[in-house]
Length: 263
Length: 263
Image (cartoon, rainbow over all chains, first blue to last red; front, side, top):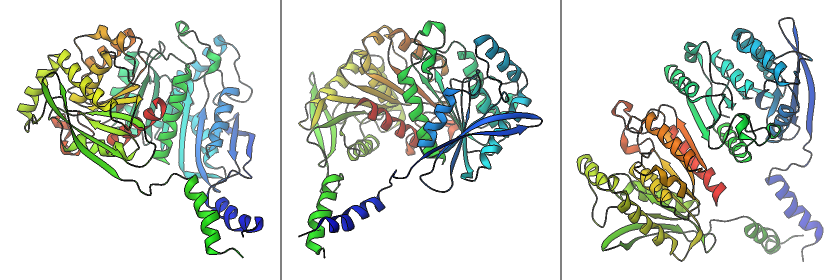
């Protein structure tokens, strides 16, 4: 007859060895201070101690309100998926506009100075790349709203990364000719009823991507407007920005499939 | 000490019971004759004997050349994924146009008589629904080129199915007002450079879906033209129809995610 000890030895131990286990997994997060030029920036790093010593890295770029709870939560979600996630700080330490007027004004500073925007996001990328547990050859960047615009600019700068994902990001650029520099695969997740990212803007973007011979995909989600991934946006589509649980779930799955492809 | 028999009893048997196994799985295919009115139709059924007694059903609608090796192969792929797959015959027994001129002429008969097209595809749907191993409450329909147009018409007819997927299908319809009848979730997988499904047609389709308050998604694949999932289409994009391995793979994955959602 098999004894409980035998069962443990010959059945459970092999099972535990054979199947990846989350035993011992622990989420680590910390604030990381870094610089771009003379500007001090304060990002947020998240990873899980389980899994391989080096993991793919995912840069997360915030909406127009700057680095806050929303993107920190996304970074933690990515960490649980097995990535080293780094939420960038584009605006600078302590610059966290807390109302739409200030947020719009701050975002405009960067939208009208794309070189500065690129330098800020590149600084965050390098910070992520140099984390000891990041595999420097496997990095992607994702962004929400303003952050979507930002990761597209990162791609246009010729950044050596595997892919970028824009969630309801603005798709316009003053430098469409820079699409030829893009090395990343591009995935755009777009609310089909987004009044802030118009169909004309989508069309210009598609033409830009074609012109640059980019590997791009664009997904349109019905009934989704701006900010469709953010529960804080409420549920009134008539405001132009609202949460859409279905589009949120689908776009997150889309991103995961994309990562499975590029990593 | 554990004996080999104990190991078998207490370790291997539980493992086999716990993890789904393909042991004993066997692909079954057969020609199925059925009717629409007085017309005899000859479809192709595929399923795997493994898995549950009732599985979700997937209807597969052919390109303009009629039911042939391409969609049969897709039906077998779907069977291996665990579905009861039924490749419909829209044209009728023996009607298998073997050159583009005849294929275009035959397809035009149905594109210009959408009522007949709907009746034909509904007959196939009912044939699938009544297979003993189909779960009648979990059915989807996919289609390629002409077949994409067809499954959209099936949806517009108000068919009680969970979802439809169009691969490089024509999106036009003479009855956009019928979008209000659509009960299926709609997934359109579109080549961004498809010259036969123009951006104007895509726009009209999107407006139609909005008007009908449909749950729809549309994915555009860069560098993909018409027929992007079919290796027989060659690799010359300038002809307007060509295979694109990346878009083929991505669109198949997209369909699988969609099925995971709806089934």
